[in-house]
Amino acid sequence: MHPLVVLLNLAAAVMLLLWAVRMVRTGMERAYGSALRDALRNARGGAAGAAGAGAVLAILLQSATAVGVLAAGFAASGMLGGAIGLAALLGADLGSALVVRILALDLTALIPVLLLIGATLFLKFEARRIRQIGRIVLGIGFILLSLTMIGAATEPMRESAVLPATIRYLEGDPLTAFVVVALLTWGMHSSVAMVLLLAALALGGVLPMSAALPMLLGANFGAGLIAVWLTRDMAAEARRIPLGNLILRGSAAVLGLAAFWALNPQMPAWLGSRADIQLVNAHLLFNAAVVVLGLPFVSVVYRLTETLLPTPPEAPKPERRPRSALDRNTLALPSLALASAKRELLLMGETVEEMLRPVIDVLDESNATRIAELRALDDEVDRRQSDIKLFIAELNRGELSDEDARRSMELTDFSINLEHIGDIIAKTLLPLADKKSTEKRRFSDEGWREIRELHARVLANTHLAMNVLISGDTASARQLMLEKEAMRRLERESHERHLERLQRGNADSLATSNWHLEVVRALKEINSLLVTVAVPILEERGMILKSRLADPR
Image (cartoon, rainbow, N blue to C red; front, side, top):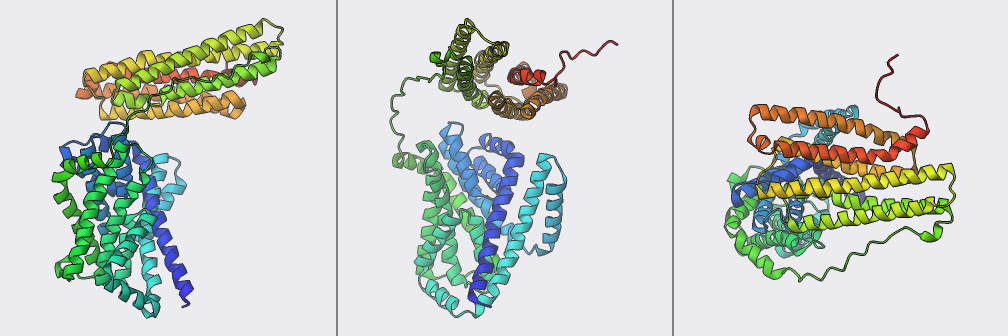
C-alpha cells in the first residue's frame, strides 16, 4: 500500500477518534450539564470528596480538561475554593485514565449494537434528552470503531522502512519522544484520544514499550497544558487551578521521565499480558499515584500558584454612562421617532436581560456586591422607561396617524412591562436571595433543578421577545405566545411536584417552601410580561382571542 494512503487512513481514524470523544462530551453536557455542574459545586468531603466528584465527572464527560475549565470558572466566581478545585482536577485526571482503561478493552463486538441503538435514539425520537443519550451511545461506538481503524491502518507500517528508523531514534532519545507527544496532546486537546492512539500503536507492534513509556509521560504533561491554555484569558483565581494541576502532574511526569532515563525499567508482567493493556494500566497507575501523593499538598501548591499568579489590583471602575437611542430631532417625523423609541426599548431589554441572567447564581450563592450591581441596573431600567414615556408623550402632542398613535401606545406599554420585570428581580428575587443566604438554607435538589430549568426558559424567551419587537414576525410572535401556555403548565407541574416533596417530608422543601413557590411565580410573571410584545401583532392578524371565556351559546 502506498505510504500516503496509509497516512490518510491513519489520519482519518485519529480524526474520527477525536470527533467521537468530543461527541460523547457534548451529548453529556447537553443532557446533564446542569446536574454535572451542581455535582462539582456541591461536592462534600473536603479534598478527597472533591477528587471523587472530579473523577466521576471526567468519566461521564470523557475529559479531565472539561472538569478543569468548569472548576476554574467556579473558582473565578467564588463558588469553589481554589484548593478544592485543584483536588477535583486531580481526581478528574484519574477519571480520565479510567475512561482510557475501559475503552481499551476488546469491545469490538459491541460496535454494531452501539451504532444501531445510538442512531435510533438520535434520529427517531424528538425528546431532547433521549436524542443526547443517543449522541453519547453513538460517540462511544465511534470511539471503538476508530480504534479498530487505527489498528488496521498501522498494520502496513510494520513493513515500512521509515517508521522503524523513527522509532529507533525515539527509543534512543526519550526527551524528544516526551516533548513531541506532549505537544501533540496539547494540539489534540484530548489526553484520552492520545493515550488510546499510543495503545493502538503498541498493540499493532508499531510502538515498542521502550519508546511508548516516555510518550505516555509526555501525554500526561501535555494534558496538564491543555487547561492552562484554555483558561489563559480568565481571571487569576481561575488560572491557578490548572496551573496547580500542571505543577503536580507535570512534575510527576518529568520525574518519571528522569527515572526512566536513569533506570530504563522493564514493564512488570502484572500490568498485563498485551502491550496496549500494559500501557493503559501504567497510565492509570501514574494518575492514581499523582492523586494519592498530591492530595495532601493541594493547599501548599495552591498557595504557590497565588504567588505565581497574584490577583492584580482592581482598577477604578468608570462611572456607568448608558447610551440613549432617543433622538428628539426626529420628533417631527413620527416614523423615525418611533424607530428611535424602539431602539431605546432594545437597550432597555438588554439591561433587563443583564439583570435576569445572573439571578440564578445569586439565588444559589448570594453575593452582596453582585446584588448591589443588579439593583443599580434596576435604576437604569427605571430611567430608560421614564425617558421613553416622556419621549412618546412629547411625540403625541403632534399630529399622528391612527396607526402611529397605536404603535406609540404599544411601545409605551411594553416599556412599562420591562420596568415591571426589573422591579420583580430587584424587589422580589434579590431580597429572597439575600434572606436565603442569611438563614443558610438551600432548595431541595429537585426543586433547584426545576427553578434552573424555568430560569433558562425565561431567559431564552427574553431573546425571542426582543426579536419579535424588532421583526414583528408573526411566526415568532405565535411561538412566544405558546411559551406563555408552556410556562403556565410548567408552573402547575412544579407546584404539584413541590407538594409531593412536602408530603414526603423533604427537609429542604419544608424549609424553603414559600421561597420556592415565590421564585416560580416570579419567573412565570416575568415570562407573561415578555409575551405582551406579541399580543398586538397577533391581534392585528386575528390570531388571538379577546377573552379566554367560552361563548355561552
